[in-house]
Image 1: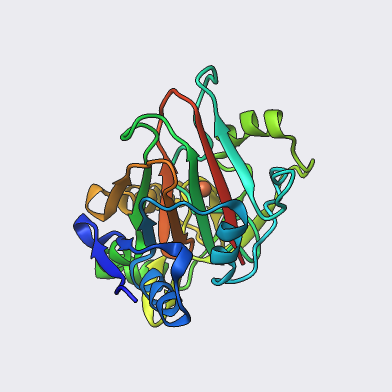
Image 2 (image 1 turned 60 degrees about the horizontal axis):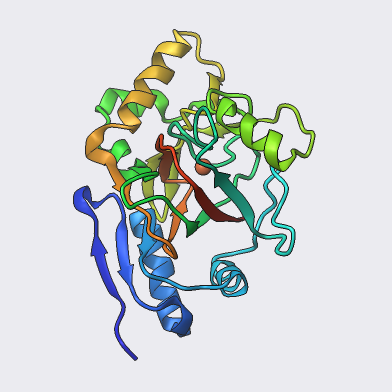
Length: 265
Ligand SMILES: [Fe+2]
């Protein structure tokens, strides 16, 4: 059995994992899960999983979740198709930093993306922003200030405009606005992380100073270049991230792209 090779990205924002996902044993799956919680996002290049193998791999991390805003793939209910065509106008789905479905009471813990069809390498990258690193770098007075605060997150936050086009194409479940509240500081295995989704946050509970000022400060801090990594997709690649410690954003591009998305509760 060949050993899995783990190679952290620049800035330690995430980690590349070199292995064949078709032939993993239980110990190796455990190693991958451990590194996901440590790095927040993992990248698997040159994979060749069919939909059933992809669902099987992602299910090792938990139960596939429903995405309330889009309809699933017609043959695989756990897969949601994120597609952009050369002729599409306007923003890409998920453009603007966010963490998935933070407007739900229990947002999905992990999100998987698989590249089915992509434009040339370097176009349509996904940006990642590590929130363990962002938390560590906060000034002490800011850590104290946000320690017990809870944010209000809405499905109609800033990022909603990028979803409207996709809903028009793939159908929506008809749900209008969903809102939820979450602590702005959370911890995973004892490590603290900023949990705020710039694309969804619309307010802060019982915070009587200037809310916009704090939200803008946090959003700008969370997405600083030193906490970020831009992942370039090739066909067959898979990325998985933890929504509790990683923000992500689609980048603007024109071209044909098709991705399969699975979220895990
Ligand atoms: Fe997303």
